[in-house]
Image 1 (cartoon, rainbow, N blue to C red):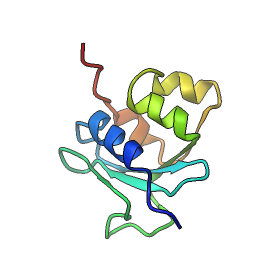
Image 2 (cartoon, rainbow, N blue to C red):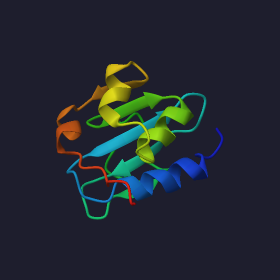
Image 3 (cartoon, one colour):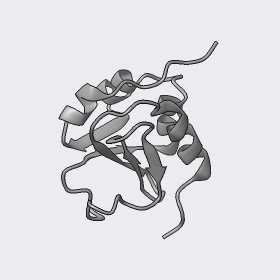
Length: 108
């Protein structure tokens, strides 16, 4: 499988600035998955699953979306909630992780 998209990794690292007490597996359509470990501050962004989580993401929250949708969420041009409500973002797994997210606000 191809390595994760570097632009997505950088964008995710910029928006997940605070710990959120959980793990998110990001699965871009047609791309390699990557992980956000929000159990520490600042959260880590990695192509590999955290060592205490299996590759399938059991116990995690998983996001499914097109690459462009994910970039827009990470860059805050499109808010997370509206992406989910419109069906552009699929979320499975531990939904309590979503309640604890506090994504970084746009600079400007």
